[in-house]
Length: 289
Ligand SMILES: Nc1nc2c(c(=O)[nH]1)N[C@@H](CN(C=O)c1ccc(C(=O)N[C@@H](CCC(=O)O)C(=O)O)cc1)CN2
Ligand SMILES: [Mg+2]
Image (cartoon, rainbow, N blue to C red; front, top):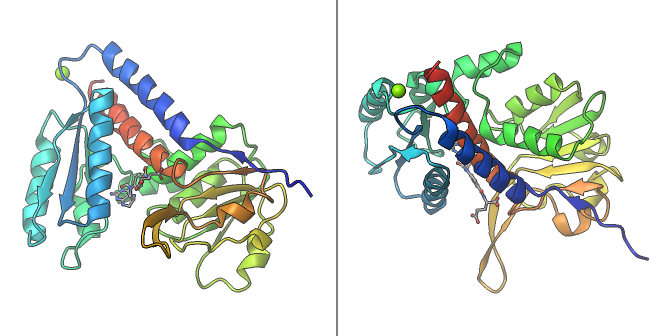
């Protein structure tokens, strides 16, 4: 039997196009400086270091100046807070973010509170999350905004549809559920403690995996014809000893059931970076009004 394979939601291609559009938008703006983004990174987690490099490279590509700082793992909470205060005052800086995860001794939530909400490029400050809850305009969290932008690009209907988000993190699950609700979907949040997860996920027209567990979403948990979005980024070691990046969705089997599916890599990851650049440019334009 020939299985019909799902169409790919190509986040990498869309992210590249959005970056070109942002570059043109920056070139057209006639301010006397470029937009600026400060990424604060602590310690030497190799995955985080790679993501930060990616972000800085993407900034350079579109014409955003980087004011990032890399701190030793021993840095204190107060040193980081002072840095954020300085960046809040720095006129050249439109966006500030703290790369996660942070070492145990640091309080990431307390740091987030210190960021000027108008420079909150990750959209994670309580003011911006509160605006999202209220349906007001504000800077939106990058990964969920990237999911919404990708669904919009492929004209996936959301109004009245059953959307199930598996994962309840403040970085992805909670804000994404609110954005889907704003788009008139009927939204369920499931998580690692949900009973009979398969029964919940099988009800989904739009199914999002955002837990961080490889292969969590198997083919028998997916309604035929569903749109499957994979937010997981898990590095797994193969029997051969080499490492491979996989999502939360068992791509090889789910692609035979779903109508649309995001790949990992090349799906939501690049969209996260594109939305970060977009937030930075939005802040830049608003700060010049
Ligand atoms: N302050 C933040 N910390 C973290 C966030 C975040 O949005 N803000 N998200 C993740 C990491 N992350 C960005 O920081 C991120 C991860 C992965 C990608 C990406 O483009 N992945 C590629 C593959 C890259 C690879 O080969 O390793 C892809 O999926 O195609 C972008 C951003 C946690 N921390
Ligand atoms: Mg100026």
